[in-house]
Amino acid sequence: MPKLKRALVVLMTFVMALASIPSQSDAAKKVQLNKTTLSLYTGKSYTLTLKNNTRKAKWSSSKKSVATVSGNGRVSAKGKGNCLITARVDGHKYVCKVTVKQKAATSKKQVTYVYVTDTGSKYHRAGCRYLWNSKRKVSLSSAKSFGYTACSVCW
Image (cartoon, rainbow, N blue to C red; front, side, top):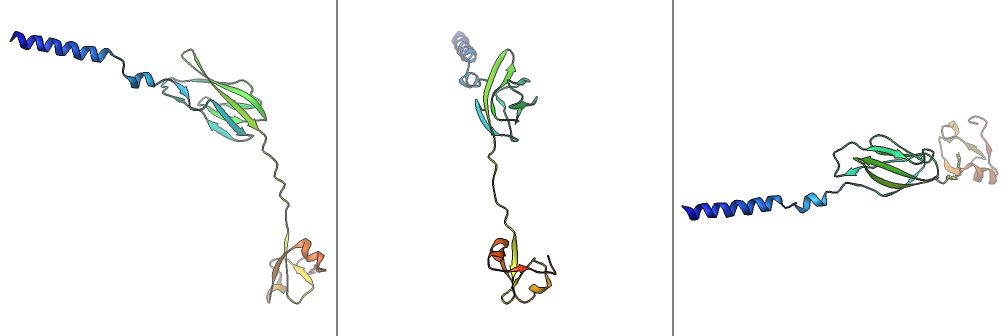
């Protein structure tokens, strides 16, 4: 019986020693932002999150004219420039550098299409009654350059 008690004491000591050692998974669960740098175009938004955090964070922006941040970490790009978005939890600061770019204006030229018939000299809109027999789609500038004139019914 004394050998059994000694074995149990040794076993319990070993188990307690193992329990007091911090596991690697606890050490690896460090609180951090999901992004430390972020690039957005004006009018767009992105939600920042704190990984491995269960506490409520206080969010702030260094330049509200560039980007604003809501209470849940949603960053909204307002104007061109750089700013810092900061999350504060339990006295610790977590910072994300945000760059906001101005979206380039698209200069798509608007093309107007008209229809011409195989035998006529006029250009027409899509629903014109003179297009019942044949119709070809061309740009308005092409129709004018080939000498077509506007239909008096549909224009």
